Amino acid sequence: MVSNVYEDPTIVADEIAGGRHRELIGGLWDEMGPHQMAFLKGQGLEPRHRLMDIGCGALRLGARAIPYLDAGRYFGSDISESLMRTGYDLELDAEGREKAPWSHFRASPDFDLPDPDLPCDFAIAQSVFTHLPLNHLRRCLARLAPKMASGGRFFVTYFECRPDQDLFATLTQPGGVVQTRDTIDPFHYRLDDLIWAIDAAPWTFEPIGDWGHARGQMIAAYRRR
Image (cartoon, rainbow, N blue to C red; front, side, top):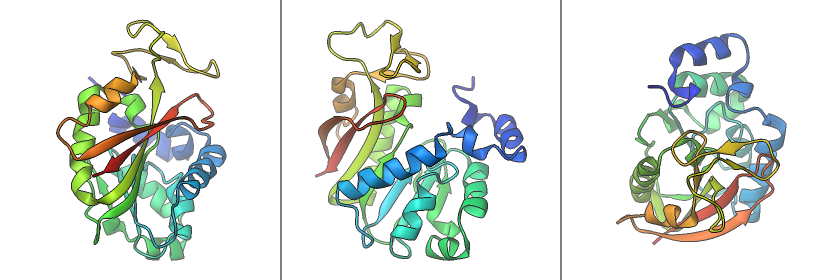
């Protein structure tokens, strides 16, 4: 069973053919791309750093991060190769493609991530954990850990179920646009769930909270031990 549209190649192909690759990843192209960049810079991202963009899609963030970063410092992964390729071809200019060669991208349904030349300093998964069951979060963290530098931070967005809310109820997230559930995409999680997902992987958890997401997603960080 397909749990979200990105796993259906027919839907993805139709949307790309119709020129709707920006809408396919949730829209908000001109809002969330700059918002992510401003957040990462505020957290210390500099041009010299290496960045792993998990769920990079059509490069909503990548189209901004690649020009900012030094050459060879951006790495992207997504479940859909065709969506990444479309973003690569249409959202980057020739200089951007030279700075981020196609070999820095990898399509995988289970977080088989690209291999950086040196460990990454930053990673981000924006609107990825919101679409995934809990064990997928654990797999992501386990597979990313060997590719991160000691002290490197992995930022993830999530829909929160606060301690005073019923975990098993349908929740309306801040802003009133998105409804989430515990077993149906889009998912909500308690902070304890995000901590549990570390399991035996070498991370520490750093809650952050509200970062001004247009649809009410919160953000947290995992720091590589």
